Length: 286
Image (cartoon, rainbow, N blue to C red):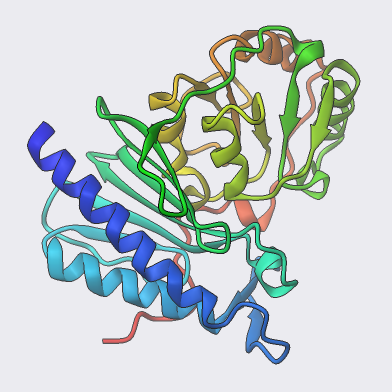
């Protein structure tokens, strides 16, 4: 699969970079057309325009593949490949004029994410990876360099990132955040997909996200793995179904999981964002 995988990765990088530029045409507009989805998150014309463009590129290049996107219904293909699109990961940042949003594109084979791309259009920064092909980082016009997680091996020297404390919904989640904040060097909220970029390039040491949809993290999995990191859900399993993630450099996963297991168990509360495979409300235009 290596030749085909490289071709798919090259396609994904080019497609995500090109489609992400569409979001810049709308970024910063004071009268941006937006609405609120059933899960309480915002969606804009820019989300739909970017995803439409990406879908069209994928359909042209890989017409037999399935497509799962955040904003439109799933396209069921005939191959064992499925593309997963998050056109604007960080829509709240986008509508507020904060440049920490990005376009995420993953390709899965038999249900396993085999490649991922994250493009930060405002920052002109891209991180991408595929199984066995390494993780790469580009900024502006610079040539790609290998991306590598940090070497911090002590929790009290680490910087732990999350999108927002507001996603720590349950009492157990709140206790977890308090413990992470108390035992790490710093906690920060550099939001959404930028957190995966920071982790893969060694600028933060862990990323904890208790509420996710598949399109929020499918692209991150090969990026984390190929940059030397580790990931699991909050139970320690590498599951795509839990809607949560603990991602770290290679040293910190065990101590963070030990911290999580030491907390008193409490039942999880459901949230709209955790329903990752629910069909979006709007239909992809024919």
